[in-house]
View (spheres, rainbow, N blue to C red):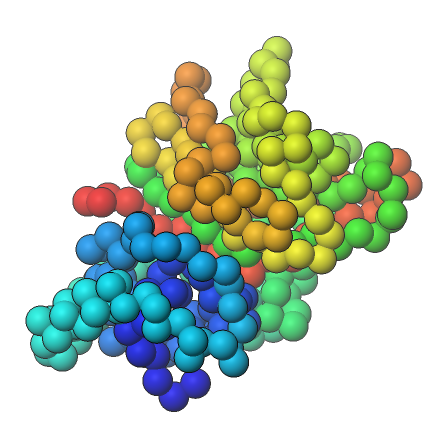
Length: 300
């Protein structure tokens, strides 16, 4: 890909390209500070909330037919023309870096990013993804505090073909990152947000004895094996909003939360843990993560 034109930028920011092209642009932005700065600036100006007519995700070969998005593309062109190359370069230098960012493309479990003493075994980086096996868990080195947003791609692999024991993925906020040493190996503390394949919904549960789950409606989030889903969790104060997009999910949940939750308890943990389901019922479990970013929302 030699050039990212303005229409392509609009489609990328609105998450309306197919996953392969989205990943190509992300990889370019990793090594191109000016492109990364343009994307950040356009998101900051609200182009990610474009009210233009939505379109289906399309493969690379059909990108040329997308110039019906002229309104947003023209606005982007005007903005980029207004922002001189020097200004964009300056922004690229001083823009806020994510708290955590890993595309899992180098085949190495990067211990500069992830704490090998926390989380749990069952983690392997290969073929541009991070594999989580039977409660494999990752915990970043960075403390995650204040207002923040977590975003990543997720798919689960059906290893057991048992509808009673499919995989599930959990993001645990406000945790120490230490897991129990006995089955089912959950973290000792924090607030669990679990994407439940069996029930097709989200369950939120504080790791506090005596407290039960709060859930979204059954079937509100159908999650098929082998499909790529985009997950976003936004934490502002005590308010949590959870968004998702991908095959079979109502498109409105890309911009409208599938579920919201208000934190009512005090947590002392400053880490985030992400893990899949443990070995249970004779079933092995595997989830795969990609393009993981945790960014501070300070000033947003």
